[in-house]
Length: 514
Ligand code: NOJ
Figure: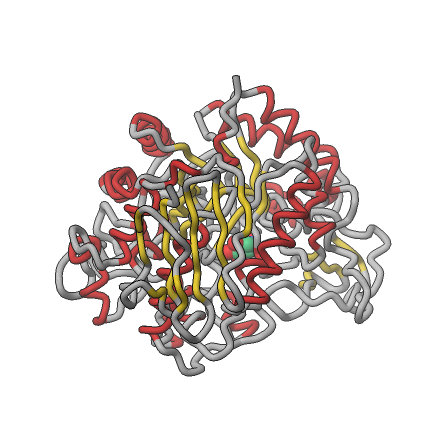
């Protein structure tokens, strides 16, 4: 019988460069993750999603893969990856790995062969075009043009950096290769695949211009669904394997097309991630999510942060609490106390809605965005193209001690950690009932309601409340004044102290009703 564990799992994203460093070079690695697996076991997560760990020139922090069947030496070896998978399984933790099908590294043997000769078969695995002028007006996902010229009159397409040439998914060899890569990792015990840029794979072969207000000719083309149907068939040859898509899509209907019963098992809910901290907008986003997923029978996901977006302690501490890449709020004022208070309430929200919840490493410690990284230390290629860096959310984790590197490494961390994080270490928070870490540990441990039916509870304006089954309720006060709690037997958990019998603003509570 299949467990369908992905339907209600708590999934923790490990960003290997910044989790823990085992060899003292300042960059996190598999040895560090293995040494710190106890943290994830104590947290109680069901699965880990590993951001890419493959050999890579690191033009985009490993999202430029040069070999999908090995591990980059900076992270360790294939043997260590296999040992990590086995140890995680022993600890009852599943492993999801990250596959990047839209593009590969310009150092991948395929692209090197394609550059060597115009007649190489590999040439057709990419988008090469001969033209005096740039073939189209397409702007890449990091900003800047999507074409790079080689030689006199030849261009190749890259929706990200020039070091990430796009693959031509019309080509059967590209399709075959990725099917084989999936099997390679499923055979090694991977329980799931996170699919990078899942909606971008196919391009309109006529290469039309982008026209304002019209769908992009390189986004969400129908042919992509056939790929995921074939991947689903492969996943089902194994037991209990999940496919999870990174699908950025404003149209919820088109988003859930990826989650039809013969396609992906789940996809990240970026609609929710970008939503303002506002009772009406939050409630309608949650309802929209539940309705859309119910239509296709897929589990909703709840995501607050990841390695690409501003950490939510920072977002929720700003006047504008939304997130989008187009609206750069870097450096605008932040009230970290308010952001932390809201982040605590958000944890109880995401961990009690139906579906699976994603935790981005450091979120359980209440880390905020480091907005004080010197430009010369920034490694994120987005910075040069868009003026926004994602490095602020990729800063190495603080484990112990009073000053950087907080037990992350015996060397110098690859990005600077704030001095204020001395109160944010795992060591400092462990055993402190008021800490973010203990809030997450308690909440994850209390999710016994996770398969119970959801129903809204009406608690008046500005309050979001719901029940799971007959015994459990979550109440979140997004209004400006304290509100009374519904009748209850016990308070299981509160994100901030209550005000007598009242639930203060920006506070969530879990109640046992009877
Ligand atoms: C999405 C990944 O999450 C991001 O980090 C990466 O830069 C792009 N896809 C390109 O692979």
